[in-house]
Image 1: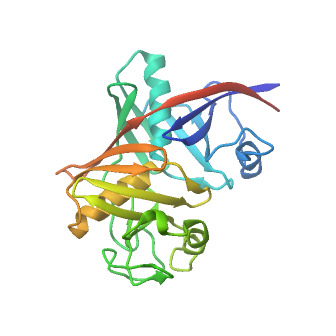
Image 2: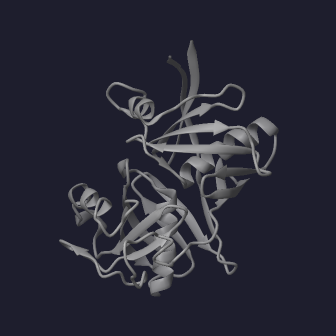
Length: 271
């Protein structure tokens, strides 16, 4: 038996997407790790399973990181799944449910998709952190990184503002911060360089995936953190390794993310 999949990406943040709406697919952590392995599997940052719609959404999206762990949110994957659903339905909008809630998406120009990522959460319990902190200025440091902004975009983020994002050894520092005891559910680590009030450079160490070419929730977190600190406005272009994402933090507190999606190839997994 072969299991069809589609390989998609948003600015290089890549996904193996499996459609389980008609036939249930049992995907445990070990199988997800095997699929995500770039040497012996298909290779991806996250394995995505599209499941039957529930709670008024058009589809449910289950997300497993490359290490097999299940997570609640992935902005770039939401855009990819929304593109699939909209194409199937001949529609310009879709509602995709994740473990963190329902996300509304709309088709944009030149193959882009905009997703309403919802409202950020700032209470230390919501990130979550292991102890009470002012999340606008968390008392944490490691090497050249210090004083992060912590917040949740459906998953936990720590955003460090730095003079030069390229100069940070994120491969060394990222895993240490991800697994620090301050972050009981681990954390996505962003290093953000403010270029202008409407433009930032961002690199992200994603929990369970490592350095990725783009992180949608990370871009949202960086934009919100910059605005909270007064370093940026509420509409920002976030430059990631794979390209650019447009992030807008609206007056109603919702964060809008716009970026491209692309299909790399299709295939089938041998079961």
